Image (cartoon, rainbow, N blue to C red; front, side, top):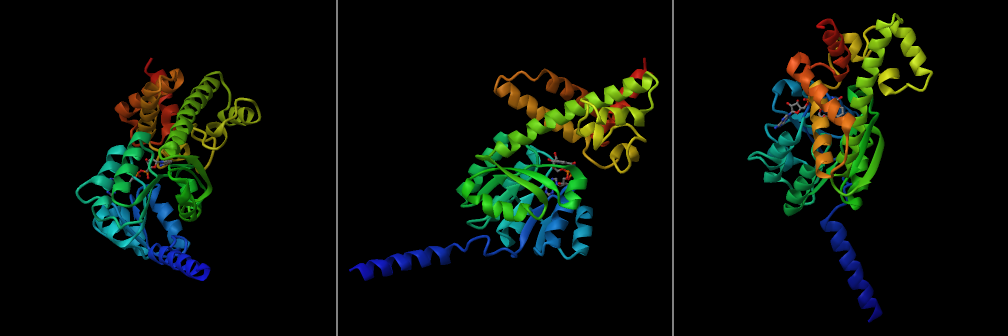
Length: 326
Ligand code: NAD
């Protein structure tokens, strides 16, 4: 009797293992990537470098050329990617794009394979992440939110920080892929919590950048050399990431957007979007964010005045122009 029971248990175990091969066993099978923009392109390249065969798509065919040259297979729609890969990463501008790519007529969920792992690294509204997770679950797939911090430089060098929300049992499989693109992969809790962490970080980043820009501008008006002022701030209590790593004043640092007429980097439109998300979540939770709200208005104003596609550190130039207009 005991032997029979043991045999039954063994059969049950084998049927479970064989019917759902673990994702880590499938390590180097195809990975899908959707959204090959400033961030998505270098992230996808790092997956290729780690030996993952890649299938990808983007609505702008030009965005796909570089990856195609490196061996990625380019398909026409998110649905086609979902037909051919059971692990997919999306890196899209904002909530409406994510809704379209997952639930649109040619979206991932039209053709998703059962058991697929869908990881969204876009910065979007946490409530949209939750909706996507419910929609994915209905199709037998798992959706995780995994927004990033670090910018294009970190995306290129594989040193992004990922903030992950979703079912904890799927974190190991998610981390296996994200480790190829980042140096920190942090589990935050249920789906949407990765987005919450990201929104908080970016609100502080925006406030810090505006503070750095207006401080540097005041110092320059007081006759200080900008490089000297930055050096002093960076050895004093005013130091922050915007002053010591991404200084907004042209000529203070090499290799940052302020040294390249604010080209590349993190667009002002994207920062305005993230501050809008902070504003929505703060209103929903009745949380006071006076500085976050002001930062939102400043970045919205910049978008309306021709700064939309410049890096968000161009708030320094915006303040200079405001002052010369007086
Ligand atoms: P991006 O605009 O450069 O790239 C987005 C890509 O998505 C574009 O190539 C676009 O064509 C593609 N896309 C849009 N809709 C699509 C669709 N329906 N189907 C297929 N492709 C589609 O943006 P980015 O700078 O790469 O940022 C992506 C996300 O990462 C944003 O949510 C942003 O807030 C976040 N983020 C950006 C940075 C940064 O420094 N740029 C840093 C951290 C986080």
